[in-house]
Image 1 (spheres, rainbow, N blue to C red):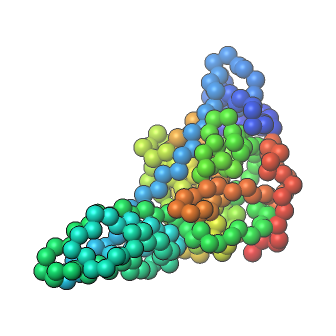
Image 2: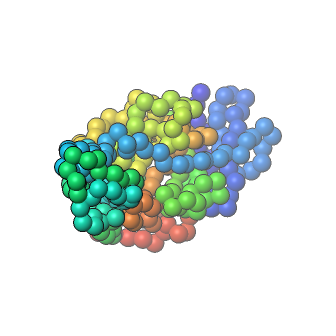
Image 3: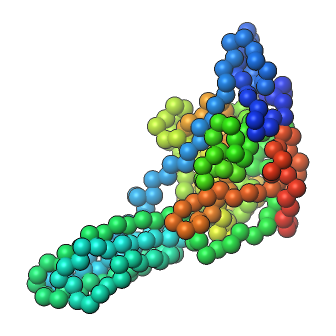
Length: 297
């Protein structure tokens, strides 16, 4: 099956995009109601399983209990530890501990000393974390297009009709493009998270993706990639134009496209932020235009 994008018009945030397959088996996208066409709906929700790489280690001895945050990721992680229900504890330990754990590092968060050694220390704990360092501030940057080929058009922009309404994806864009389009790094950085094993219709909403940490603490995320196409590994350094993967239709995606978003930690939460490209892009919604930045590294 081939994919025809030439007829896809420039679209605004309020446009409805229809998808249909013609008599030749060619998939078409249009903003006009066509017999047999279905509304193209993008439901992009980031899902990342950090629990396998961010840990709270609790070490108990007869005289004390130590809480340590361990970060196996190649990016800093902000953590919060809340302790309650304390019993048999000396002094008044802090009820809430905040810290930023550097990449591939551990940080001791709290030490509870027993008031009566040999008797159990009692406590409850709540442990939260989020990727990134909230103290970092984004720097101006003009992003080159994160794909090769085209021209392609925006199928959904910021605050889109179908999704892009939550904090994590409010300023994301979706670019409709054929499966297998080369996806490349739009900014230099360190690959901190990848997913490569999701088939089309897989259980994870974001499908296959690559997350890259930039030098100002922001992160670029490339979603819905073809299964098995991711060619970078976690911890790898990339520069502008480094091949990352191939576009696809994995996750909550009703058509082959690239979902590209830039995020930062705003305090135990990731939020998308506005960004601009270094060249015009047909169909780009107005809120994304007119932004500029320094020469890219």
